[in-house]
Length: 223
Image (cartoon, rainbow, N blue to C red; front, side, top):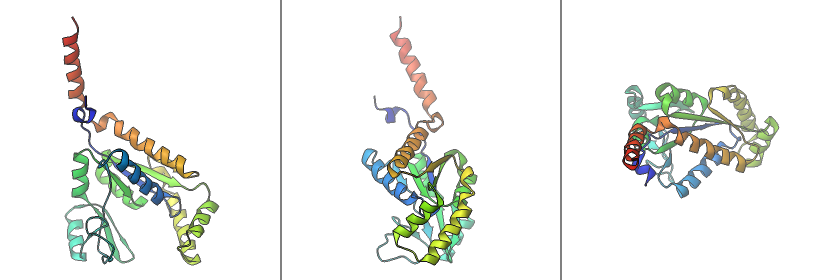
Protein backbone atom coordinates (compact mmCIF):
# COMPACT_ATOMS: atom_id res chain seq x y z
CA UNK A 1 0.00 0.00 0.00
CA UNK A 2 1.31 3.46 -0.89
CA UNK A 3 0.60 5.68 2.12
CA UNK A 4 1.01 8.89 0.14
CA UNK A 5 -1.49 7.70 -2.45
CA UNK A 6 -4.10 6.93 0.21
CA UNK A 7 -3.51 9.76 2.68
CA UNK A 8 -3.02 13.15 1.13
CA UNK A 9 -2.05 16.07 3.31
CA UNK A 10 -1.79 19.80 3.07
CA UNK A 11 1.77 21.09 3.23
CA UNK A 12 3.17 23.25 6.00
CA UNK A 13 5.04 26.53 6.10
CA UNK A 14 8.17 25.96 8.21
CA UNK A 15 9.60 29.28 9.38
CA UNK A 16 13.10 29.72 10.80
CA UNK A 17 14.12 32.97 12.46
CA UNK A 18 17.21 33.98 14.41
CA UNK A 19 19.67 36.80 14.92
CA UNK A 20 22.60 36.81 12.50
CA UNK A 21 25.23 34.33 13.64
CA UNK A 22 22.95 31.91 15.46
CA UNK A 23 23.18 29.34 12.66
CA UNK A 24 19.81 29.67 10.93
CA UNK A 25 21.22 29.91 7.40
CA UNK A 26 23.34 26.78 7.84
CA UNK A 27 20.42 24.85 9.30
CA UNK A 28 18.18 25.99 6.45
CA UNK A 29 20.70 24.95 3.80
CA UNK A 30 21.37 21.57 5.42
CA UNK A 31 17.66 20.85 5.81
CA UNK A 32 16.95 21.59 2.16
CA UNK A 33 19.86 19.44 0.99
CA UNK A 34 19.01 16.43 3.15
CA UNK A 35 15.26 16.57 2.59
CA UNK A 36 15.70 16.71 -1.15
CA UNK A 37 17.89 13.62 -0.99
CA UNK A 38 15.39 11.68 1.14
CA UNK A 39 12.13 13.15 -0.21
CA UNK A 40 12.77 14.85 -3.57
CA UNK A 41 10.39 17.71 -4.28
CA UNK A 42 8.70 17.67 -0.86
CA UNK A 43 10.43 20.76 0.58
CA UNK A 44 11.27 24.00 -1.18
CA UNK A 45 12.68 27.32 -0.04
CA UNK A 46 10.25 30.20 -0.40
CA UNK A 47 11.30 32.56 -3.19
CA UNK A 48 10.77 36.24 -2.39
CA UNK A 49 9.86 39.10 -4.68
CA UNK A 50 12.17 42.10 -4.55
CA UNK A 51 12.61 45.50 -6.11
CA UNK A 52 16.40 45.47 -5.85
CA UNK A 53 18.45 45.11 -9.02
CA UNK A 54 19.20 41.60 -10.26
CA UNK A 55 22.81 40.52 -9.86
CA UNK A 56 24.57 38.78 -12.79
CA UNK A 57 24.68 35.41 -11.01
CA UNK A 58 21.01 35.45 -10.00
CA UNK A 59 18.23 33.60 -11.81
CA UNK A 60 14.65 34.89 -12.03
CA UNK A 61 12.30 32.66 -10.08
CA UNK A 62 15.15 30.78 -8.40
CA UNK A 63 16.84 33.42 -6.25
CA UNK A 64 14.10 36.07 -6.42
CA UNK A 65 11.16 37.28 -8.46
CA UNK A 66 12.48 40.64 -9.62
CA UNK A 67 9.85 43.39 -9.76
CA UNK A 68 9.71 47.09 -10.37
CA UNK A 69 8.60 49.22 -7.45
CA UNK A 70 5.24 49.76 -9.13
CA UNK A 71 4.74 46.02 -9.76
CA UNK A 72 5.57 45.29 -6.13
CA UNK A 73 3.14 47.92 -4.86
CA UNK A 74 0.37 46.49 -7.03
CA UNK A 75 1.00 43.01 -5.60
CA UNK A 76 1.07 44.35 -2.06
CA UNK A 77 -2.10 46.41 -2.43
CA UNK A 78 -3.96 43.52 -4.07
CA UNK A 79 -3.19 41.19 -1.15
CA UNK A 80 -0.87 39.03 -3.26
CA UNK A 81 1.92 39.05 -0.67
CA UNK A 82 1.88 36.98 2.52
CA UNK A 83 4.45 39.26 4.13
CA UNK A 84 6.62 42.18 3.05
CA UNK A 85 9.15 44.68 4.35
CA UNK A 86 11.35 47.53 3.18
CA UNK A 87 15.06 46.89 3.72
CA UNK A 88 17.71 49.47 2.82
CA UNK A 89 15.38 51.20 0.39
CA UNK A 90 14.25 48.03 -1.42
CA UNK A 91 11.05 46.03 -0.97
CA UNK A 92 11.03 42.30 -0.23
CA UNK A 93 7.98 40.07 0.09
CA UNK A 94 6.58 36.56 -0.21
CA UNK A 95 4.17 35.99 -3.13
CA UNK A 96 1.05 34.18 -1.98
CA UNK A 97 0.22 32.15 -5.13
CA UNK A 98 3.25 29.78 -5.31
CA UNK A 99 3.03 29.08 -1.58
CA UNK A 100 -0.70 28.30 -1.75
CA UNK A 101 -0.09 26.04 -4.74
CA UNK A 102 2.67 24.10 -2.97
CA UNK A 103 0.61 23.62 0.20
CA UNK A 104 -2.41 22.38 -1.75
CA UNK A 105 -0.18 19.83 -3.49
CA UNK A 106 1.11 18.52 -0.14
CA UNK A 107 4.53 20.11 -0.46
CA UNK A 108 6.20 22.02 2.38
CA UNK A 109 7.70 25.50 2.10
CA UNK A 110 10.69 26.68 4.12
CA UNK A 111 11.00 30.34 5.15
CA UNK A 112 14.13 32.15 6.32
CA UNK A 113 12.61 35.40 7.63
CA UNK A 114 12.67 37.63 10.70
CA UNK A 115 10.10 37.94 13.49
CA UNK A 116 8.24 40.75 11.74
CA UNK A 117 7.69 38.69 8.60
CA UNK A 118 6.73 35.72 10.77
CA UNK A 119 4.02 37.77 12.46
CA UNK A 120 2.54 38.63 9.08
CA UNK A 121 2.50 34.98 8.00
CA UNK A 122 0.77 33.98 11.23
CA UNK A 123 -1.85 36.69 10.80
CA UNK A 124 -2.73 35.41 7.33
CA UNK A 125 -2.23 31.62 7.52
CA UNK A 126 -1.91 30.52 11.15
CA UNK A 127 -3.15 26.96 10.59
CA UNK A 128 -0.39 26.33 8.04
CA UNK A 129 2.54 27.94 9.85
CA UNK A 130 5.09 26.19 12.09
CA UNK A 131 7.66 28.54 13.60
CA UNK A 132 11.15 27.84 14.94
CA UNK A 133 13.43 30.37 16.64
CA UNK A 134 17.15 29.61 16.72
CA UNK A 135 19.18 30.94 19.66
CA UNK A 136 22.95 30.91 20.23
CA UNK A 137 24.26 29.23 23.41
CA UNK A 138 25.53 32.58 24.71
CA UNK A 139 25.97 36.21 23.69
CA UNK A 140 29.74 35.76 23.66
CA UNK A 141 29.45 32.79 21.31
CA UNK A 142 27.20 34.82 19.03
CA UNK A 143 29.83 37.55 18.81
CA UNK A 144 32.59 34.98 18.28
CA UNK A 145 30.71 33.41 15.36
CA UNK A 146 30.22 36.79 13.73
CA UNK A 147 33.92 37.57 14.13
CA UNK A 148 34.97 34.14 12.79
CA UNK A 149 32.92 34.66 9.64
CA UNK A 150 35.29 37.53 8.77
CA UNK A 151 32.61 39.08 6.57
CA UNK A 152 31.81 42.28 8.47
CA UNK A 153 33.57 45.27 9.96
CA UNK A 154 33.60 45.87 13.71
CA UNK A 155 30.89 48.51 13.26
CA UNK A 156 28.64 46.08 11.37
CA UNK A 157 29.19 43.36 13.98
CA UNK A 158 28.27 45.82 16.72
CA UNK A 159 25.07 46.68 14.84
CA UNK A 160 24.21 43.00 14.40
CA UNK A 161 24.60 42.48 18.14
CA UNK A 162 22.29 45.42 18.85
CA UNK A 163 19.77 43.97 16.41
CA UNK A 164 20.06 40.59 18.17
CA UNK A 165 19.02 42.20 21.46
CA UNK A 166 15.76 43.27 19.80
CA UNK A 167 15.21 39.91 18.09
CA UNK A 168 15.80 37.91 21.29
CA UNK A 169 12.74 39.54 22.83
CA UNK A 170 10.43 37.75 20.38
CA UNK A 171 11.49 34.16 21.10
CA UNK A 172 8.24 33.41 22.96
CA UNK A 173 6.16 34.11 19.85
CA UNK A 174 7.48 30.89 18.25
CA UNK A 175 6.25 27.29 18.41
CA UNK A 176 9.71 25.76 18.91
CA UNK A 177 13.03 27.00 20.25
CA UNK A 178 16.41 25.56 19.22
CA UNK A 179 19.47 26.54 21.26
CA UNK A 180 22.19 25.90 18.71
CA UNK A 181 25.07 24.64 20.85
CA UNK A 182 25.90 21.79 18.48
CA UNK A 183 25.00 22.04 14.79
CA UNK A 184 24.44 18.29 14.26
CA UNK A 185 22.13 18.00 17.27
CA UNK A 186 20.22 21.14 16.28
CA UNK A 187 19.82 19.80 12.76
CA UNK A 188 18.48 16.48 14.06
CA UNK A 189 15.97 18.33 16.24
CA UNK A 190 14.89 20.51 13.33
CA UNK A 191 14.22 17.43 11.19
CA UNK A 192 12.28 15.90 14.09
CA UNK A 193 10.10 19.02 14.26
CA UNK A 194 9.39 18.82 10.53
CA UNK A 195 8.59 15.10 10.73
CA UNK A 196 6.25 15.55 13.70
CA UNK A 197 4.39 18.41 12.05
CA UNK A 198 4.00 16.41 8.85
CA UNK A 199 2.36 13.61 10.82
CA UNK A 200 -0.24 15.74 12.58
CA UNK A 201 -3.77 14.57 11.79
CA UNK A 202 -4.91 18.10 10.93
CA UNK A 203 -2.50 18.02 7.97
CA UNK A 204 -4.28 14.98 6.47
CA UNK A 205 -7.64 16.26 5.17
CA UNK A 206 -8.88 12.89 3.82
CA UNK A 207 -7.89 10.81 6.84
CA UNK A 208 -11.57 10.25 7.75
CA UNK A 209 -12.15 8.68 4.34
CA UNK A 210 -9.06 6.52 4.75
CA UNK A 211 -10.17 5.21 8.16
CA UNK A 212 -13.68 4.61 6.81
CA UNK A 213 -12.19 2.51 4.03
CA UNK A 214 -10.22 0.48 6.58
CA UNK A 215 -13.38 -0.15 8.59
CA UNK A 216 -15.24 -1.31 5.51
CA UNK A 217 -12.39 -3.65 4.56
CA UNK A 218 -12.26 -4.97 8.13
CA UNK A 219 -15.94 -5.87 8.07
CA UNK A 220 -15.29 -7.95 4.98
CA UNK A 221 -12.60 -9.89 6.82
CA UNK A 222 -14.64 -10.75 9.92
CA UNK A 223 -17.32 -13.47 10.01
